[in-house]
Image (cartoon, rainbow, N blue to C red):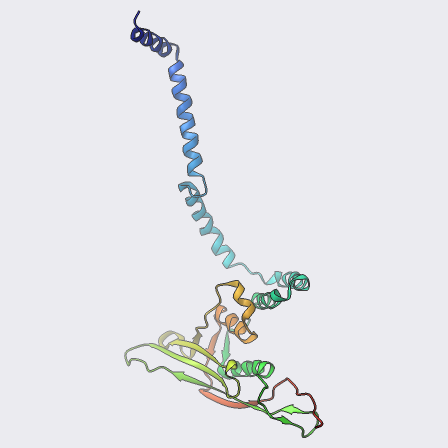
Amino acid sequence: MSLENGIKDVINTKLKDGTVEKLIGEQLEKGVVNALDNLFRSYGDVTKIIEEKVKSVMIPYLEGYDYSRYITKLDSVLVDVLQSSALENKKLLENFKELMIPEQDKTIKATELFERWKEYVEGNVETDGLEVCYEDGPPTYEYVSVSFEVDYNEERSWSDMRNAVLVFECEHDSEMNYQIRIHNWKKFDKEEWTIDYKSVHDINSLRHLDEFAIFLMKISQNGTKLILDSDGDSDEIEPEEKPEASFS
């Protein structure tokens, strides 16, 4: 018997007793398992489909969830973290905590926002270069001039969109100055203006924000509308920082 005929006989025998069919079945099973394994891997097609379905259900639920009941718990947790964290993270966590407390007001007047900004200036204005007053009690720094105005953009006559910039300005310390873009759709918004204050996308940037910036972020993300009850005003504020008494 030739080698070729011998091979044929063996194959015929294995085909008849079901060996080949069994082996083919085993390999097909392995192939299906491997294919499913690949589909369910991190970047597999099935995994992507499942991920999209989970997102479509979970994200709207999380966005609409009322987290206010957890604010007290969050506050205590953050206090513990602040007490044990490094100093460089303290400002970041304080700002994060402030952002998590929802803003209740649906509208705010321009004059009210001006008052809020003045409080910020009183506590943070640079006192170098200010004269010291010694009359009527302990020494104080001289008053600082502040103002606000609404700078309206020139619009097309056919446009229903109005744009403006709300400018808060401190004459003595330009670091206190703020420009806040606002816009209004006359047809739909009536006299309410939308605050276009850009939020921070990198959480590490929170450590560098002052309290007025955090407040603007809160009312902007809360959808609080601005009422322009005035196009401008001016005032004088007294710095909170007190000079050391000098007897020279």
